[in-house]
Image 1 (tube, helix red, strand yellow):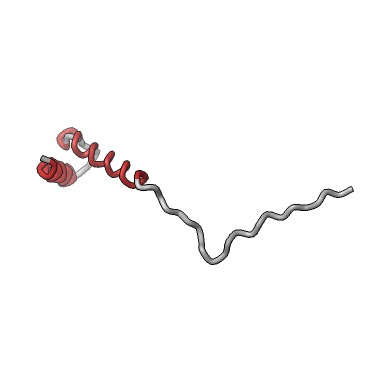
Image 2 (cartoon, rainbow, N blue to C red; image 1 turned 90 degrees about the horizontal axis):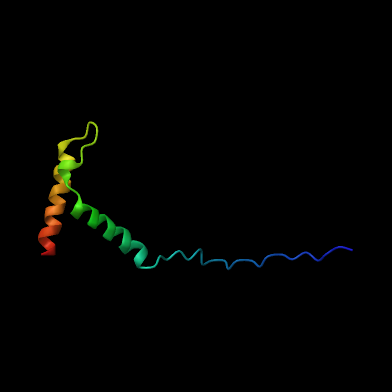
Length: 70
C-alpha cells in the first residue's frame, strides 16, 4: 500500500521576497559604531605599518561628533 504524496504549495509569484528589516537592525550597529568612536583614543590605535592619517581621521570624526553632541 502506497502513501499519498503531498506536494508543497507553490509560492506566490511576481512579488519576490519581502526582506524589510526592523528599524533597530540598522540603528543599533550605527549606535555601537558611534559609541566606539567616542571612547576610542586614536593615540592608542597603532596597527603595524599604519599611516598616522587614519588615526587623525578618527580623531577628527570624534571631535566633530563630540562638538555636535554638546
